[in-house]
Structures are given as C-alpha cells and as structure tokens.
Image (cartoon, rainbow, N blue to C red; front, side, top):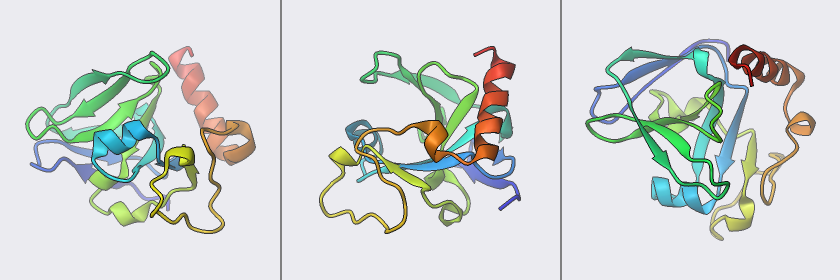
Length: 159
C-alpha cells in the first residue's frame, strides 16, 4: 500500500491525509488504550509527523498522563473530541494515528500486538503476528526501511 490514506473525526470538522504507508501498526492492549477508547484495544499506525497533513479544520491538543510520567499528547477534534493521533513521550517527530478514524480503517491491520499482558481474555490474536507482553526491541522487529524512516525523522527533529 503506497497510496495515501485519508481520515476524519466523527463530526467531519477535521480531515487529514497520511502520506504512504505507516512505519508499523500496533494493536495496543494496554489498560490506558482500553480506557481511552472504551474498547478492548487500540490500533495505532505509526507515521512520521510530517506525513500527517491536516486538510480541513484544526485539532486541539490534550495532554493525558502515562505510566512513564511523560504525557501523551492527543490531537482531538475541538467539536466532537474524537482522538485522531497522538505523540508519545514528548516525541513530536512521530504520530500514532488512530486507525479507526481512517475512511478505510480495514486498510491497516496490526503488524504487532503490544501490552498483551493486559489483553482482555476473549480477544484472540491472529497467528503469525508478533505479540509482546509489554513493548519490544524496535530494531529487532521493524523492517529496515521503517527504521531508516524513523531515524531520518528523529534526525530532522533533533531527537
């Protein structure tokens, strides 16, 4: 999938475009994602922040607490309050885009499942997709092309 994807909030005030494919897509089963989404897990596609383009409306940023102590910065529609993407750990060079806000949310399946130690028991993970109790060693899991993209985004951001 090398074509751009588009997404929006529920009320339609905010629209965005994603350039190309994500570096990786997470199925996150942490308790925070469960609480924030009201669901069993969240699906987040990880993009360089400059590949996320706002095409209509504006977002508001909400800082939410995390276990690390560094807030998650969630970009939400100021009207319907839907979470569209986040920046974790103060790293603004990367955006974790909520796959459920895509016009075609089925286009991106998780490449990896994380924080499965807190997975709800009735969710069955697909065979062949890596799953980790907490997080994972990024260089050991990500494709080389994705690592190069991440490294370039970090250098550009001075991270």
